Image 1 (cartoon, one colour):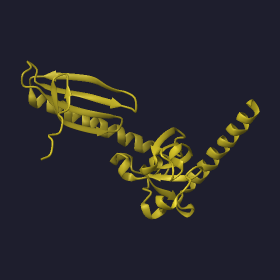
Image 2 (cartoon, one colour):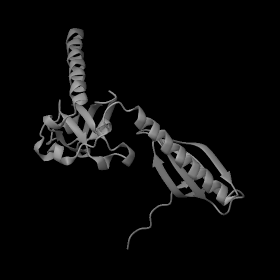
Image 3 (tube, helix red, strand yellow):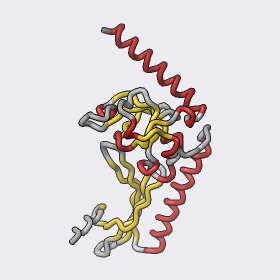
Length: 201
């Protein structure tokens, strides 16, 4: 017999609806014992901490559901605004465009594509998928660790993925032109960093 899933609670409210889109999750909760039995708030988290914000409680169910719906819609609009600012084609990097991960021994210095399933639906496109792998125990297939430290090719941010999050190395002929240019930039920075490190020693 399956164990009953643990309920998600916030200040006594059982979270009955949660939709994560964009940079935050919108929550709706219920606690019939409270004077204000309905709850709506935001939740945001990173690898270290999570925080709740703009939490509201009320006794009008319809009003609180409307608030929940309005907040979800606002998050959707923020994502559309983000999409509009993307300066490259928002194409998806598919499995067929990559060499299988099983054929990739050492990932260091390679352009890898994150599996779409590892990303939230609204971020399953090249500007979020394509990364240049710099280091980490997960770069080698025989290693005990799985962490890979990478540079996102679109925005240049340092990110961490696990080796199993990759669908494979992007075949050179399938790498978008903008990404090829970014790879050269990242490689140049890595070379400069290594040269500086040698000089310091």
